[in-house]
Amino acid sequence: MLPKGQRRRSVMAEYRATRGVEEAAPLPVPVLDIEDETEDGIRTFAADVAAAGLRLDQYLAQAIPDISRARVQMLIENGQVRVDGQIAKPKHKLHGGESLEIEGAPHPPPLHAIPEDIPLDVLYEDQYLAIINKPAGMMVHAGSGASEDARNRGTLVNALLFHFAKLSDVGGELRPGIVHRLDKQTSGIIVVAKDDSTHRKLGEMFSQREIAKTYVALVHGNVAKDDTTVNLPIARDLVRRIRMTTRRPDGRSAVSHVKVVERIKSDYGLFTLVEVRIETGRTHQIRVHMQSLGHPVVGDSLYGAPHRIGDGEDALSLDRNFLHAAHLAFTHPQSKKAMDIKTPLPQELQAFLEKIRTGFGGVE
Image: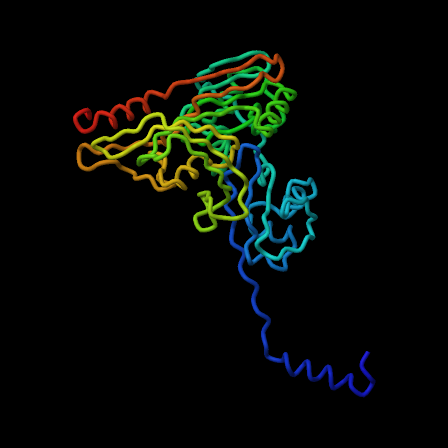
């Protein structure tokens, strides 16, 4: 404590120094884009500089304004939020720039998904699991929308609930049976669990990279090497938040093995048909990895592919990505049977590929 004679002078000096000086306004907290997630259901992003000095629950409540602070605190207390890889408490003070992970859906799920009579292409089925050939344009499960009715219709889950008497409950009422995901505009093989034991075993197999997943893609340009491994971490693009990027140091590890199947020199330009085997299942992994090589997937305008190929009446366009989950190989988690499931390119991709190969003379 200051000597008795100096106390008044000290307080008065401090008062005069701060009189009329307004406290700096805090930086506005940008809203996070949290719609996309990886196969393991974890969303990863960096805390904005505006998070400096805020509690973890305060920051997330402002960065995700359409959910309540109580919901944020529940996620944190359940261990579903990590800061730099560590489970944190709601009062954890942020500095800005930390890597944040949210496991599961930040928004509370709708009450339930609705069964719908939507045709399914079932490639394999037994009492434990089913393997489906998903068409492009179909979401795997409900996303955000204007109403519960809009969010809960037309998805793979709606079709599964209609066609199968029992599905696993591990994913909750919004995602019965769903073990992994495919992008809406990606077609191909997806495995569905019918009971919780099978679901957990499949989830562990995906996590331990014991399931081989191979995709077929048509990309722009001539991929130089016959075999290429892309080992670049993937994170949310902080400028265009609907995209992912390989240019952030705090991304999650992602490995893709690219094998050239066919090089095409066409009237429409140079293209390469590739097979891509992925070890991990990050959001948009193949799309962002192929973009990093300078060869975006045909039809994928989000990652730099043109909307139209060619000019005039000969121009081609594709209203989906030329990306198809063509092969899935694993050991059945219950019967231990070797599973080797393949499905050819869907008709719209086959037809598009033939037009590219044939050139202008083959366009009707």
